[in-house]
Length: 143
Image 1 (cartoon, rainbow, N blue to C red):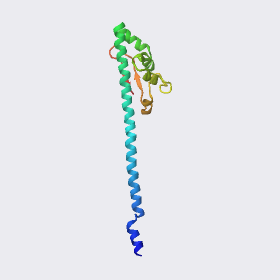
Image 2 (image 1 turned 45 degrees about the horizontal axis):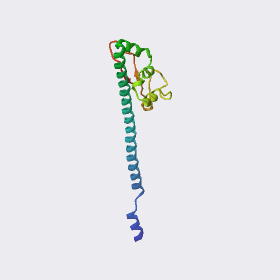
Image 3 (image 1 turned 90 degrees about the vertical axis):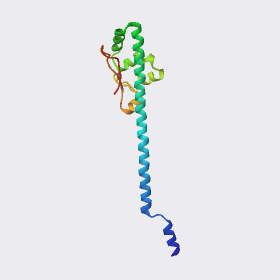
Image 4 (image 1 turned 60 degrees about the vertical axis):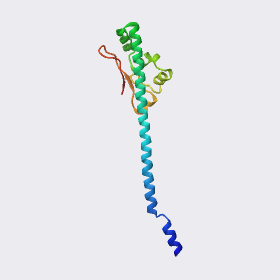
């Protein structure tokens, strides 16, 4: 009798075990959600960096072409490229080879109007290089 009372005082009850398991489950769900959000945030940062890299390439190309043959001719050549993919190819000399290959990879960019990378595909976004009008400047948009 004394032995069974000692065992009972030192052991966990089933209710206590279930409460501990539930608390551990809730805490692990919060940790997993935090890591999931961090991964999505990282993809968004990468998307913004890729947008900035392509915009810098466009800026460098416009600067170079406008010095060589004038701004109107640079605008004409840019618009003749016809699509976002064509415009990325046009300014490709101002991007590093790996980035250019990544943007032009057929498994990433399947629509000529939407330039994508692996990170952009995962966020459901794409880069759009619209027509350059006389009253504006060529802009790389993240859509």
